[in-house]
Image (cartoon, rainbow, N blue to C red; front, side):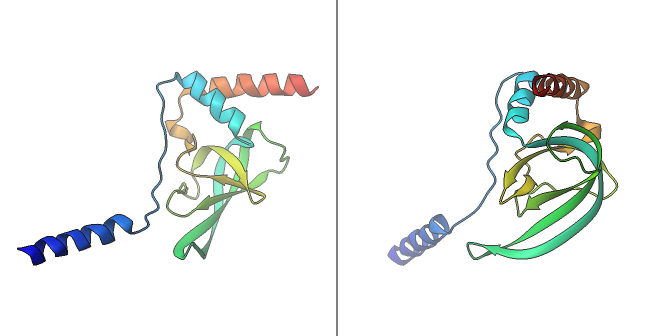
Length: 151
């Protein structure tokens, strides 16, 4: 009986101390409008467009293998960002990265990491068909306000 208990404790200890990297996204009870405003402010780039290319590189972060995927987006509409190009590179990292499909249209929120536009599953990035009209309306208003302040 003691051996069984020791074995159980040993297995539990090994499992409990094993490093795991999980995505933890926090959702709030705020209105959609407030969530969109907060995401807009914290993002360096907010755009819609079609994914036209995908390149994957295999890397290791803290000895854990992961994939870094660089997507090319054909710009449809820009709500925020300094990039004036018709195509934009978007990076998506590892297990928390957002998985895009070539040929599909998306609303994408990015932040800057190591000089790249990066998105993940914790941003408001989603398939454009799943985006509520209210969100696009709020983004257009925020974009308009931003443009009038910079003039």
